[in-house]
Image 1 (cartoon, one colour):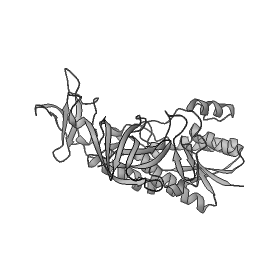
Image 2 (tube, one colour):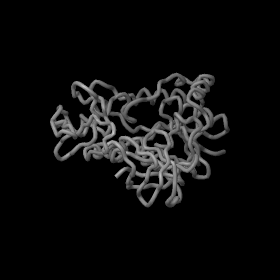
Image 3 (cartoon, helix red, strand yellow):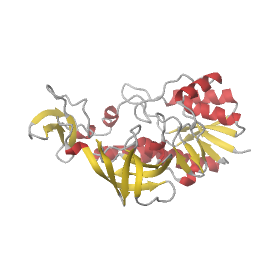
Image 4 (cartoon, one colour):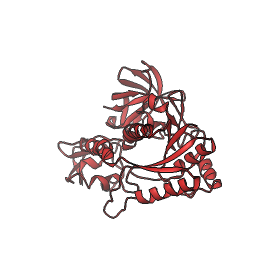
Length: 341
């Protein structure tokens, strides 16, 4: 019997994943990954509640349950990376780094050491012979977050939810009496929950006030409490009064200045060509050619030509910021991607 360790977060997706695998005849062990337990001012980290929910489902299913403590590694690999990227004025994605370094590396390695043949998670995606394929539910598809996982890891991974929609998952969980069936999806930062990125970063970086400057006129139009908190294309939270809305079109971390414009057609907001670094291919590099790309989670796929480390877009894309990931597809297959230089 194939032994599968299931990453159980305490949510409905991973709960149903474990249930389906039990029904399919696998020898299932549930594992809660303890990645982050730190409270934030005014907000308690929900990890203990999530652990209790995961345990409750494991008992209901009659499966073994373990806790893997990755908190130290998570802090170094995911949290420190995120803070360093924001300090440098870039826009990181901690969920992608968590999948690369923790769920499909540390968790996989630990599970195999404990005797597992495979791992499984509640991600909305599919695998076939080490390839990563998009989920049936286009709105929930999570291949964007999985593009830095290695093909070798995917060949030892099961994604039982890849063929279902979120409403189907909730209904199936309810039919099986899982206590997490109606539990809301987690929001906000992947490891802290409801807290916003500004509140989180404020615990680790000094807030240095500076000027908000109109790019066209060069005039100061407002003040900010730290350029680190602003991202390209941002409209809300600028506290710049009157008239048409301003959008963030750039920032200078050395000068601690944020540049804004009322012109939605500003060249700084649109990219025809995207230079990538840290390119990762799930399997073999596909070579130059035309592919579909996704510039952020849930963004529509758009056509682009890959030449070396550069993507040439048929249609310019808005607010593509340094540090964010561009993911590359061929049909239903996610090939990999890279980080905006």
